[in-house]
Image (tube, rainbow, N blue to C red):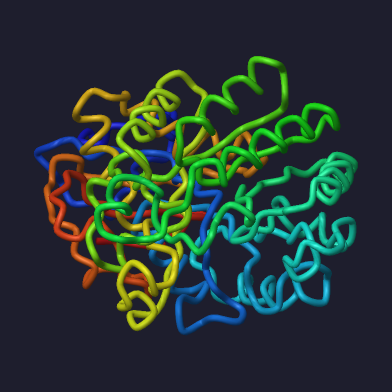
Length: 394
């Protein structure tokens, strides 16, 4: 199989057996370690009309992912063993790839009392109340102390509810020009500054979810320089779009929102200098009806597992913003290092020269809302291998 080009991973000794299903190709076919996304919403149990663990994990496999971490805003919220067991059973019985569940930080993600963190710690990848910020500083400090004792990461959705004022897109030029209520950047960077301070004081491993604005990048950069055990992620849409790309369509509504051009530039700089540790999709599917109500009334969230790598390869690697090796580290190795996720010889195989146009009708995810519909990209996933099996083949 001389046409195989291994990037970010050593060439396996048994490559002929592993990849014998691939057709002979005149152009190189790239083999990467299976990608790892530490921030996805698979909606099950509780919201299977949006997504299931089966459909979400198949979408992940089509996007080249072999490991994902599923957020806990479910019904029931996994805050103790009784409420975690249904999700563990669904993962065991239906997941196409490795799916690692988060446990909630607080009971019911209500912010009132700690979840039974010790009980569920052996069965969850980390703790998060994603979808909701922990508003009370004392509660976050207690959670960090317990997470440190248990050897787990706190992964925080940073949002100060007192600063939202009913906003639903960025409080910027587009919102003012079109009469929309905005979400200020301080609602994100304020809680980040609070949390990195607590993390430094408590010695907790702390991870910031879906960073979207320049002040957040700087706060995390400063915390790292001061020696805090802090990492963060951003998502493809924050790297490739800003508020100038907004349209009056629910597929452009996510939380945090698309910010300013200056924020986008700061995120790219943070990617280049290592402040931003990894790229996660925040894959958040909803029904077509929930995303059909325009910017104001649609549900927050877009899908991203099936589009992340081709978008980033096309618009960051091929334009010289970062190297291909750097992108592979951001999408495969860095997430595994931070969350202690094993690799297990999982691969994804791509034709980087083949071009296509992003079409939600092709998605395996039940969610179809993406702001990237119609974007031309280079790179098609030919196959994904997980646990020695082909879990996706084009």
